[in-house]
Image 1: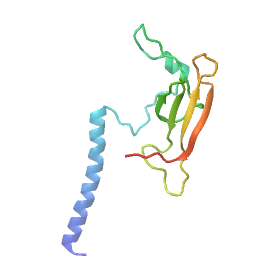
Image 2: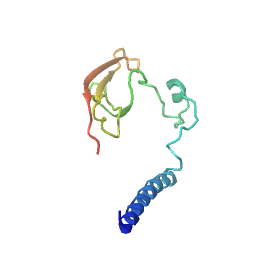
Image 3: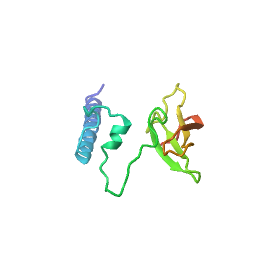
Image 4: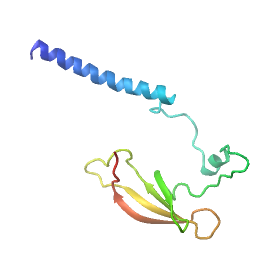
Length: 133
């Protein structure tokens, strides 16, 4: 291996290492925290989480659905019947690794008894690998 090749190779490795660490530093500066570490906060049950919301007096926060009825939601929409269509992604924002079956799905959540809480779940499509940019 020539001296020039070794120097270029070492410079390339250093650039890769530095660019990776600088991206982490920039993200921490932009968002104000290091999201690679756990927050240390305890898991809160859904109802307790709702109780901690701070909203103006004229607003009300109600829990419509929580795990296990819905898992890993990344997007939703509401149709004309009041049903909520949810995209559940388990690998987002990456694609499913080669050799593994895709697990993403679209589910429909419904409140069939009118109490404001989802009580019916229908899987509309599953085994998908939704496109990611």
